[in-house]
Figure 1 (cartoon, rainbow, N blue to C red):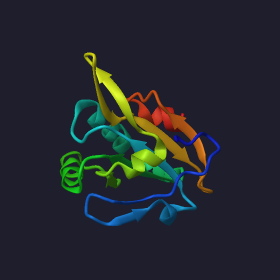
Figure 2 (cartoon, rainbow, N blue to C red):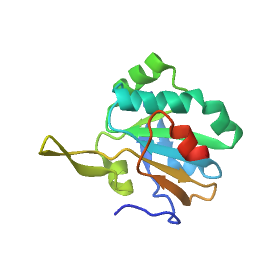
Figure 3 (cartoon, rainbow, N blue to C red):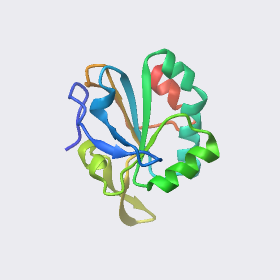
Length: 149
């Protein structure tokens, strides 16, 4: 079941692009932008990641950490980060366990064909681990404005 604004952010452990284990509890005390995206190096996902990258200093200056999550593997994430010089970790959720906790692994439809995939969604989590905002209609080119205003 998908968490709502005001709920505690579901805790998880995932591996980043270098195989390093990251626990959400490790970053408690910091504000988190947790963004779920469908696929590395695709037009929308690249626009979103680069918008966050280009505004990274604004996020840091306001006390945010950024974590990206997709079902791609660590190797794919490493290539994506290197290609676009992304300054934040991307977590590989190949078994979709983090997606399941956040309700972002959903049935989608394209050209009348149904399939399972990632719902592009961003969760903004406060210092106490509480979800303070959920952005479902992500503007990939202007995502920073949606998060920081």
